[in-house]
Structures are given as structure tokens and as C-alpha cells.
Length: 65
Image (cartoon, rainbow, N blue to C red; front, side, top):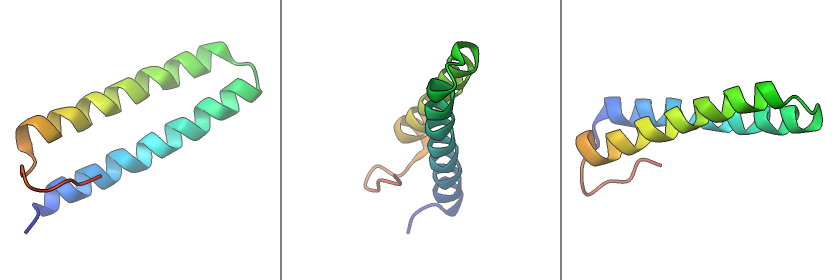
């Protein structure tokens, strides 16, 4: 059985990644370079945390995303 906390954390991270991707698209359309760079930074952090979970905490036989 998958660790419930890992599943919830991955769901939260996936939700935030989706939000960031939408916001990057909006920033592109509005030509807002500063906002786009800030959101890209958040996206990098989210991917870092997801990779950390995958490497160190998650069950090795289960993919959460």
C-alpha cells in the first residue's frame, strides 16, 4: 500500500505544477517577463521537491505521478 502522505504530497505538487504552467502561459500572453521568471523559479522548486521525494522517501515500487 502506498504511503498516504506521499500520495497527498504528490497530488499537491502536481496541482501546483499545473497552476504554474497556466500562469506561465498567461504571463507569455501578457508579455510579463518578470512574472514569468518568478513562476519558472517556483516550477523549478516544485520539480526539485518531487525529485527529492522520488529519490529519498517514496516507495521504490510505486510511481505517484
